[in-house]
Length: 112
Image (cartoon, rainbow, N blue to C red):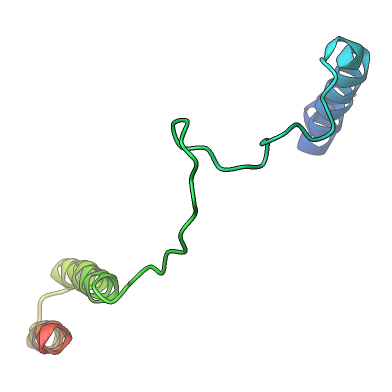
């Protein structure tokens, strides 16, 4: 019977109820907030008035790097897996074809 108290849903509900009870008991000690003080929602930058600017991020240089990173890491994983496979001419041929195709993809990726 005691082990039922260790099931995650029971533990979650128990802790949730304890925190809720603690929150209700100590709610009177919290300071009362004003409804909307002046400037609460205004942006703040070291005491200066801040006029926000809309930023348009440019990912043109990010995506080629991300694809390059992904291609090289996946190719490293494939080549490491082929190295652990049984050695045969077929496996070596697949490895060479794969390496050539990865180099072609990387060359096409950075060709302008």
